Image 1 (cartoon, rainbow, N blue to C red):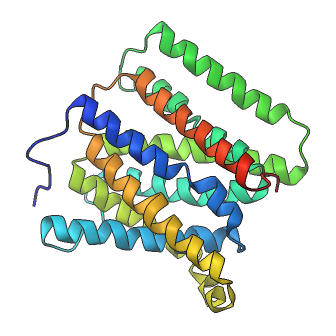
Image 2 (cartoon, helix red, strand yellow; image 1 turned 45 degrees about the horizontal axis):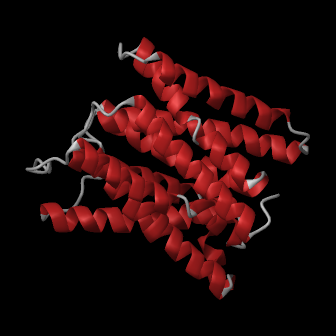
Image 3 (cartoon, rainbow, N blue to C red; image 1 turned 180 degrees about the vertical axis):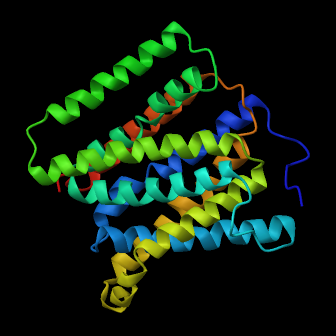
Length: 265
């Protein structure tokens, strides 16, 4: 069944949807720091909850259960890229400064632009290359910091999360909305399976951590990806607008972390 909406959003509506999604995503760094549990456990339970949220939305929207096994290479790319993104980001946030992990993950527009230009033949304007150059400088400065070996590993995982996010973004663009969301259900289930062995520790977790896991799964992951998948129908959105939204989100998330909790691992 084709779940493509009958009235795709205008470019302005799509940008607004992505902006709201970015605001919800921006809660991630501070919430992950507040959760007193292992990175694998947090990533696993958060993704399990998000799979239920996105799957429930698809069940309501299409009146059928979502397809768990993707039927196209693009959908598999989205699922695997997504699973790697969410697991690597949680792990990076626990090992290094949350702000570092956030900024490194949102280096993804750089990889999207390079792939779009050299693989898909998309035109990137000079001003957009300039914005991406600034992003490269930021990444280099983060790796030039005097960090502990653990912090350097965290930075590397954050950068790897950015690469995975770029793969996911490019793959989602190639799919219909319903197929893209089904791929995200698959990706969340894959991420959940990675840490399912930690679930036996759930009864020992404090109330705050359990509440944080619920917010991470529903508000910070499930709902914004539904909005993101809906917005992706506008394929001609300029790269500089995408970069601006991503970098704005990273600034918001960094601000939350610096103001709310200690951001050093």
